[in-house]
Structures are given as C-alpha cells and as structure tokens.
Amino acid sequence: MATTDDIQREEATTKDYAEYTLATGIEAGQRLELQSNITRQMLGRVLPQQIVSHLRSVAKKGHRPRVCDIGTGPGHWLFDARAQLREDDINAVLDGYDIHQELFPPEEKRKAEDVSFGELNIHQQEHFIPLMKSKYDVVHVRYLSVAVGPDQWDGAVENCLSILKPGGIFVWEEILLEKMELIDPEKWTNVLRMFKLNWSILRRNDVEPKLTSLFNDNLEGVTQENFITKDLNEKWQRLQALNMSMASKELVEKAVEIGEPAIKFVGLDSAEELQEILRLTQQDFNNGAMLHMPVNRWMGVLPSSSRGSGKRPEGKTKLTESFRRWFCCK
Image 1 (tube, rainbow, N blue to C red):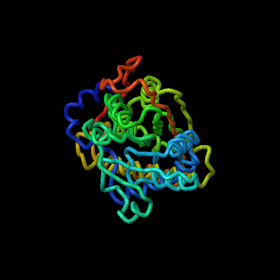
Image 2: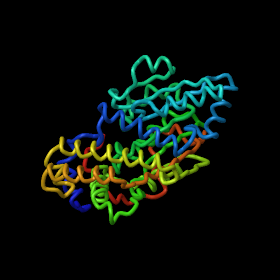
Image 3: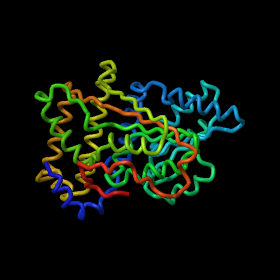
C-alpha cells in the first residue's frame, strides 16, 4: 500500500485524472438505486421531523418552501422527499443538482413528480451565484465525500451555505469508510484487501471531524445521528454486501481506465493483479462476507446574522489531513 509520502509525491502526476472515482453509466445507476434503498431502510423517512416542521412553517407564511439536493445523481432522495411531503400536505419546490447530467432521470419522470434538475459543480462558486437570489429553505447533500478532496471541504460547505436562507436547515449525510465493519476479517481476507485498496482510491480525508467542525463553526443547533447497516435485517445486510461488491467493481474499472499511475499508486504491479483481487473479493461477497456501512447525518440551522460578508470561514481549528487525494480535485 502507498504511504502518505507516496500520495504526496504522486499528487503532481495524478491531478490531471478523473474527478469522480465511481462510474456514471447504467450499472452505476443500478448501484445508486440499490444504495438509496438501503439508506432508506437505515434512516427511515428521508426528511427528519425538524425539516418537515420548518417547511410547514414556511408554507403557513404563504410561501412555497424551497428544497435542493446537491450531488443528486438520479434524484432518489428528491423523489422520496416528494412522496413524504405529499403525505404531509406540503407543496414544496424540489430542485436537484449534479455535475453528471447523464445520471438524471427521464424528463417524463421529472414532470410527473414536479422535480427539476440542473448542472452544478459543488466546488465552483460561480455555479451558485444564479441560485443566490431565491435561495432555499433546506439544502441537502448525501454521499459526496468521494468528490471532495482534503482541501476542498471549506469551499464546498461555504458554497452550499451561500444558497441557504437565514433560518434554513443544512443537512449532510455521509458514509464513514473509516468505520466500515467487516465481520470475520480473518476469513474474508480478499474483502479486507479490497477494502484497503478502496480506502486509497476514495482518497479518504477525515470526513467525520471535518464536517463536524464546519457544521459547528457555521450553524446553530447542530445535531449528529449515526446509522449502520448492521442494525438491518439479514436481507438488507446481504443487499449491502452486493452494494459494496458493485462499488468495488466500479472503482477497479476506473483505476484500470486511468492506467499505470493509478495501479502503481495503490501498490500493485498490474491491472491484471487488481482485477484478480476484485474477482476474489466478489467471490467472498457471494460466499457470505458482510461489510457493514456506517452513515452519519449532520444537521444545523443557518443563523440570520452570520452570513453576507463574502468571506470563507476560518474555522476554530485547522485539522490535520491524514490522507491525501490521488485523483484530481474539481
């Protein structure tokens, strides 16, 4: 495996590579749907009661509540939110944004559900400027750490907050790869090895302390909730194993597509060696390996007096980044 020093040495040569380390094709859409279904089972109703109450209070004032989902992909969260809001008799504007428009659902589904989609790069401040006029009552982000480099967190969060109304709610849900739990690792050595490779490929960057710090520095009434697939029944645990197998395949295919620098970075000699590890990993998953997915949900309210200076928050402390990226940042 590459060391931290290796990663830093590779930074100059890897920064021209793909910004997103997972796929965006048909198979990726199938995996994202499965992942969304698993997450729904973990979290229950996608909108916590605090958000529902806030949107209802906005509606009672005669305004149509506005909600956006950044990194929306196929829009699963938005469609779940629409269904829940209809049950609660709340008619909200729902907008989804993503840099990968090829993941967006068909136009007929968008119209049927009254949900809009548009292109947006979370790292490009100019992409947010057109959205600042109307702003949103709720801004939601889910599973986007794969697209956020270690030095990009402050800017990504600041951009999201720039389109949130004072008193609005910001919520970010993220997988904590560093807390993944492999049951019986002595038995499933191939999954363990692939997991360690995935750790490098996904350029882990201290998600939990970074988001915790940024939420505490910029928002009020911050809460954190923890979920894990281990709490689900066996059916959903098996589906989570399938989800991890599919994600591993995407990561390997992306590394192979990039070529030798990516292969060498993770400490292997050839694409064939990486593909063989994938084959053995998928065999382990088929034979019953379980890798449980932990998820954190951060939620906070934007105070009315903290925005508008145009300056990025300095933060209370500068956290040490323990892992460096190997794909380029956006």
